[in-house]
Image (cartoon, rainbow, N blue to C red):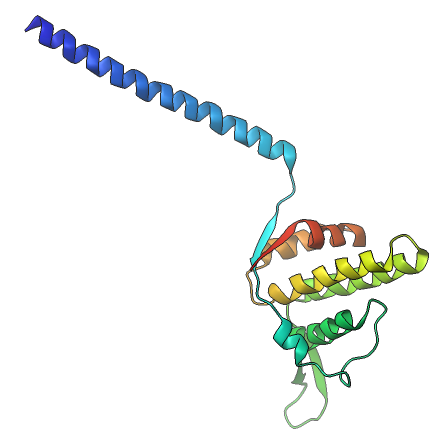
Length: 179
C-alpha cells in the first residue's frame, strides 16, 4: 500500500511539474512578444479587404475624364473617386437645385489633400513624378476599397495626422489591402 501511494504521489508531482513548466514558459514567451511588438511598431496597422477595380476603370471613357499630371490611369481613378464618393440630393423637393453630399468625407478630403501635396512636391522637385504617381495610385486604390468597409479607427488616425506627409505615409505604409 505504501509503494502504491508513493507511486501515485510521484506521478502526480511529475504531471504537476510539467504543467507548471508549460505555464512558466507561456508567461515568458507572452511577455517577450509584447515587448518586441511595441518596440517595432507603436503605430496601428490597418487591413481592409480589397477587390480589383479594372472593370470600373475600363468603363470610363476618354470623353469623361480630363488630363492629370500623374497620367491617364490616375485621371480615370480620380473620376471614379468623384463618382463613388459624391452624390447629389435636391435642396427642396421640386427645386432643380442640388447639393453635393460626400460619403466618408474624412477619407475623401484626405485623398484630395494628398493629391495637392504630391502635385506641389513634384513641382518643387522634392520627389519624382513616377514616385508621386505610384504613391497616389496606391492611395486611390485604398480609397476605393474602404468605401464600404468599417473605417472608424482609420478615420480617427486620419484626423490625428496633422500634415500631408503623415497622411501619405498613413495610406502608403500603414494600410494593407487583402485581395
